[in-house]
Length: 241
Image 1 (cartoon, rainbow, N blue to C red):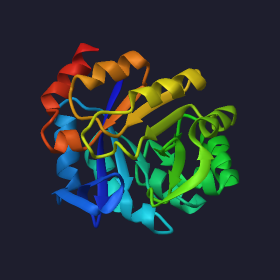
Image 2: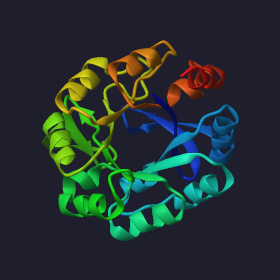
Image 3: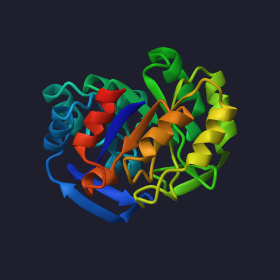
Image 4: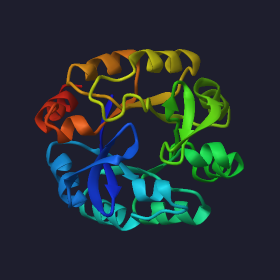
């Protein structure tokens, strides 16, 4: 199981939210590159970079941060937040993203998102299927759609999607543990999907459980920033695989 730390960006700074609520913003570091370099120094190879300003606006915003991290580290970056057009996608890939995550766009403009899968390939496009009571949430989690989570994932699996990041919003940033039951349900109903678990991870012991469930990766945010899980522990987990 891949370990994928998260850096969420608002105003060029590394922040975390609770349950996606922008009013709960905590700034952890004013220099995201510094944070990314500390991940790399501890044997981490992957990074989940989220443009929270972009998620709220109509276009990509913090692509310069992406460019900086991509050019000054060897981290393989998946980038999301506010990717709403072909030009946004082009900017993200040209700025150094290895993969992009599409969430709102996959709900609001299926035709365009399906075009991206066909054009760039399923190894480059991740489906962001963030859930609130098993309904897909969009626009930086500021609104719920009427889409049921599992059928939504299944429909995109038919279109060729391989990677899915699923965050249970009720768990995100709460340090109360991830949604094991929800992930088990997804893996059972969308056979063969590469599921990346996100949200709620609070202790190191949860990582082997997610691996046993069959998650392909896990995104860890606040637990790292609050010192609940150390980078050394993550390094050991990666080495021991």
